[in-house]
Length: 392
Image (cartoon, rainbow, N blue to C red):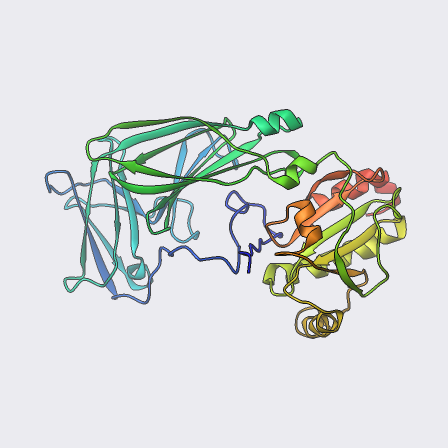
């Protein structure tokens, strides 16, 4: 079975492109099983000396003119709870974690004035209750990001995000830029880089992955220019939307042909009943249907091939309706895709994340990908020419 990515459409965040995925191999989390009630981090320098004033946390996030932060703002979080550096080593180089914080197992440290960095993972609870976090001269890793395919398609590369993971897949840090670049301060070690970008109307680049090894004593690595290819979906923006093809069955309504509804806006959502965020998306789409269907907007959902028959899909929808939608039934048709992997229509659009909601214009061209909680409503009102006088 093809790897499934299920994204939370309700939240648009920097990691939101990539967070909330389900049914995918899950990277090792910063938090391990319940640990001791007290864990001592001993921060030391290259010669083993105690280092005071080192910033310590579980992940480093760097924003550059992004998310409302000024350039080069460095913030730290603990499992997403705090956007600040949570800990600073004391005069003896110690950081003492107690209670819930003592369960953390992954730590990145930086002493900016000295240019030292360190990274350590606690694989098992030490008998001493202490973890040594050694800092060494950091390697300045930097690069420039661009997309030739975006340029060809006429898309602007509005924002890029570069992630650094350790060799076991743990997220260490990410760098968000609106200037097409990335940079990190890393101790010696093996890493995996993952880089992606976004453009207007929900256009995305593919996520590139490459390995990186920082050798002991290495002080700078220039990644040069990294080209980010467009996704297949982004390459369709502004072009005639592919016709729905390979559909095995329809439930909750009559079959829909994009050719037959030309002249009417179409909201097309790819989803799976196995996907929690997809299930939570449907009530919002029902609200938008109630608001915009009277103006001629067509709503269609496309289910992937994890369900094979209309009977099974109908039963599943009834179960979900009772459990999650307060017994409300979908008011628009659901197509059951068929074919290899996720289905023929999924393949035609290059769908790799669920749910994905697309907007097709009156002219039959694909406008873009929009969150039902975000820009979709604004886009529909603009497309229909609705002013404040014609509705809320």
